[in-house]
Length: 297
Image (cartoon, rainbow, N blue to C red; front, side):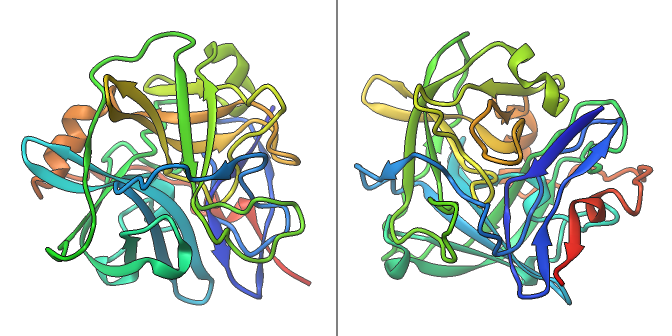
């Protein structure tokens, strides 16, 4: 039996993060302004990271899911790669309407971000909130129109991943257990890939990476969903994957599962062009996502 926690943050006075014991794999889910949701042990951004993005998805009657994303480029097309669970319907797994999703970009400082309205949202056709035992496919692409005056520069997807590779993680998640607001500055954390067995408790599947906590236990947590795992290729950053879920839902000090963007690069490239992959009907347990939420008392 495995326990998993979503990594997004839901800003709401009526909802709080909860966890569920499930037999089938469950991704890391969007959650509320709960004091236990954070990137723990990171530091303020030391670079401009013009490809970093923050996402806000409005759920009627629930609140706003706060996530992280990355402006990526493929064959001249640009869009935001993030986690499917940040921008999908709780009961069907289908993409939320573009009108409900906003992307913030242009700065590493929260009070200097520019808000853009999504023009389209696509989630991978295999995404179903981890209902079955097939790959999670916790990946989505959000397209936006970028003003010429906005300082945004997309980065490419990596074309290979190496075992125990050093990575840098970015996220807009909270930074301390008692935090009630997101960080004023984008957070970063240096760590490495580790063996898939370290993420067994989170039900790691094909198309996913396992990332170790830093030596001091620092790790991503809620609010960092969809945030990038970066690697250097010479002087350029490339993105290996996006944050999906954690193995230790209490302290977020264990290994974390990231969706492998190299594995899903063909689909991401298609989504960036605006080409929609047919979304075949899939069985989704209507209570699956809801199991990770409870009404606050």
